[in-house]
Structures are given as C-alpha cells and as structure tokens.
Image (cartoon, rainbow, N blue to C red; front, side, top):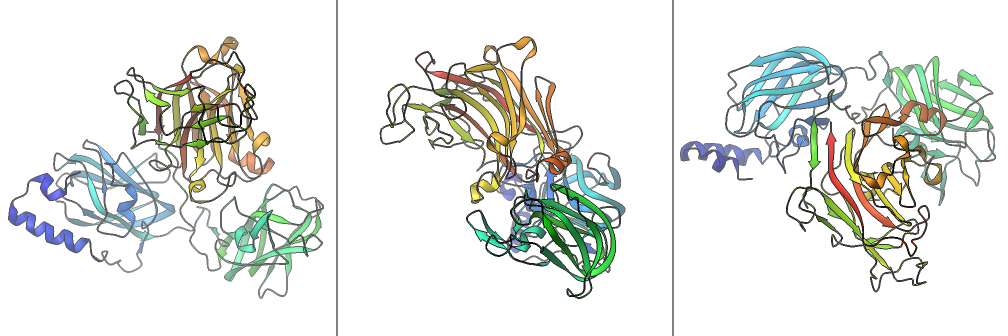
Length: 577
C-alpha cells in the first residue's frame, strides 16, 4: 500500500507538517492522560473489525503504539470493536485518526456484541485526535463509520476506551485465583507431566495442569492451595480434574496459610468439572484431598476461586463471540487461470511426510493447482520420492515414499478464534485415500505438542467408505480413537464422492455445531464436555488445513484398484465472524 501522504496527494506544506507529525508518532507519542477515576480499558484487548487492509491489523489500534495502525476496506459502513473483557462503565473514547478518517461515525456500546446502543454520533468528523466524552456501559465498544472523509477507508493509529472496569463475571464476583501464587503437597516433573507445578492450575489454561509427584505424592492426603494476595470473601470454586481426581476432599480457607477452615466437603467426588458454591473468607484457599479415586495421585487442570476482595490479577480478555448474523471476514474462492497455484497470501504449502502411518510425501504445491473453473485441485499421485522414507508400501514393499500429494494451511497467514468455518468440497473414492479439512491450535506452531493445542476436524472421509463422513475434536483428555465426535451420512445413503458438499463448523464460546449441506449433524456443548470428558481447549486461535492423505492407520492401505491420480476438489473456503 502507498504511504498515506502520497496516497492522498496533499500539498507540499500540508504533507510536510503531517510528515513531521508521523515521525513523532513513530517515536514515543504519549497516550492522552486518563482523567480522575478513569482507567484505560482497551489496551491489549481482543479486537474484531468489519475488514482490514492487508498489513494493517485490528490489534494495532489497541497496542499503545502510535506508529502502528488499523486500516479498513474502502467502503461504507466499516467498524472496529474492542472487547473489554467484562462489563464496564465507559466515560471517554479517544480516536487518533490517520489521514483516512471518518466524516460520519458513531461510538456504540453493547453487552453482547449483537445489540448496540449509540453513546456518541457526528456527521462532521474532522479527523486528527478526538477525545470524546461519552456515558454508557457495556463489555464491547465500537467505532461505527458510516461516511468516509476520503476515497479510502477508515484508519486509526489508536482506539482508546476509558472508564471504570467491571467486576469480572457480571454477578459481583471476580476470578481471584488467576496468576496468584500457589503451593502444593508435591508436584510432578517427568516425561508424563513435565513441570506440573501449582501455577499451572491458576493460569486459566485448560491444557496445562498440576499433579502430585509419583515419587512422593501418590498418597493421601494431597493438597494444592492459592494465595489470593489479600483477604477475600469466597463464593464459588471450580475444579477441572484430570482422571487422577479426588473421591474425598475438602475446600478450605485460611487467613494465614496455617490454620484452615472447611467450607465444602464430600466423600463422593465425581471428577471432571465440579462447580462448588461455598461461603467463607480468607486469604488462602485449598483443595485438601483425603481419598484418591485412582491408584494415581491428585491432578487439576484448573482450580478457580471466585468472590470479592483479594488482590485479583486481571486475566487476558476472553475472545468475543461472532456477531449475529456473522460477517464474512476471510475467503478463498480459488478463482484464476488453470494451473495457478494457491494464493500465498492465504495458504502456505506444508511439505513433508505425513503422520499416522501415512504413505505419501507432501510436495511444495506441486500437487495443488487451480483448474480455471473456480476450484482448487489437490492431487494424489503414484510417484516415488527418492530419499524420503515412509512406512512400507503394501504394493511394492518399498520404504521410499511411493506417493505424492498436497497439504497446505493458513498458519502463517490467518489464525482466528471463533466463527463459522465453511468449505465446499468434492472428495475422491478409493481404498487408502483420506481427504480432510480441519483446524489446529496456533500454539502448535510455537512448540506446544499435540493434542494440548487442540485439533478440530471439520471433515474427514475415508476413500474405502465414501458414504460416511466424520467430525471430531481432540484434546489432552480425549484424542485419537477417543476423540469426541461422530459419523454421519447423506440422505438416502448417497455417495460423498459423487458431488460437492458443504461442511461447516459454527464455533463459539459455548461449543461447536457441525453442519453438512445446511443441516446440523453433530453438536458439542463445551460445558457438557467439561463435565463428562475433560477440559475444553479450543478457546484460542486456530488455523485451517486442507490435505489429501494416502494410506495410514485409519484409512488403511491402497490397493491395485485405487485410482491415481486421485483428486480432491475445493470450491471455496470461507470464515464468518
């Protein structure tokens, strides 16, 4: 994109003045000072937008850096909204506009990001820096632009929201235990649970856990406690157990970490997720286990304490749910000339050998191309890749990879949390073929191992049974053959390989609803999964993957009748939020 001064063709004197301002902005331009009793609520919070110009991300408007910015599409209306994490009283909004500013816009607040109340409106916006006094309350705040001042979009160096923060859950209780110091009777640190320290139970990360030591702690009693930093009134405790749970335990409170008073007791612990209503006061809260439900120790993915007082650490904001109705935020229609490669701004090849006993070598986009009719063709071929090792091929016995295919993902270009994910795909038929459209947690790319990052399979079809499709999720407590999901079929037991079909996943803070051709085929309720199977690890950024595998533990081997080349056709992939 051209720089803003040149883009707008400003006179030299004006351009020079703005250039000087821009140079200052890229230094240490201070934020507007907060007024008495005001807090800057928006910095570093989760942001969603109507759309973005490539390279100008929404997060840049709330990063506290006046040298980075968000820039919208060149159309009306456009908007940017920030999730404050909990309901707050909003008293002021500061907009630091780039040259592409709004002539007409509104500042709006909402409790649910669906129903909005306008607290400021103008049709004579002048750009520059606007400090707007407003009066309203809500968890979400947005700038809703209805008329651009230029032929370009809307662009903000900073979008700052000031006011009084809420209490955390809308009911007067805050999460008091997040990030606080913990202690335990013992902790595990080995290949099965590395650094499973008390802090892992207070990090609001459902894929990390505390566990007692197998060397000294697989005995009774066993305990874990948290220092809330100051005296507090405790109203609720949430325990998300690993399979090593307590059959008998107490929740105890203490003013000093030495003298303990029980506020809850049971001899019939159920494991999984337990939400306990309690009433007590103290600076310290402890789970004191007196009888293990298994031969192992005690282990908690999460130990959350809610109440008032204490010295709570503000946790990172939870991601906002998609708008209702959701809006298209990303898509690939695969238009373009025949033999054109996938758009590198959207997809990157993922070359290498496959997992799960697969027999193919994934090439660097040699097996993926557009067909000129609006489809992506992912092609599996029977051709050897010298120097690349695979499991023995059942037809030749060779351990050199005898097949090539295509795998690509959006890990480096587009990661997102929540939305409606939709793809129209035609799958191939043949023993050993395994087409898939799925998502992986983005932290997989930064070193968190599978399945702790979370995997969401939207579509899998086995070429040996093209009348059945599968949708599944995988997490630490349920993965592989124990993943949660299920098979489903087409009306009349039709063949998936005969035509294109539309697979969808509607993913939000409540769970995932899978759909096929407009009908719901499987629903995963987050709360139910936590109460019956284990922690839900999918409330964080994921990226999309398309691939066509050959062979493997699940689909089984190819045979002489498997057609090559085999083609998986993708008509489009879309994401709505």
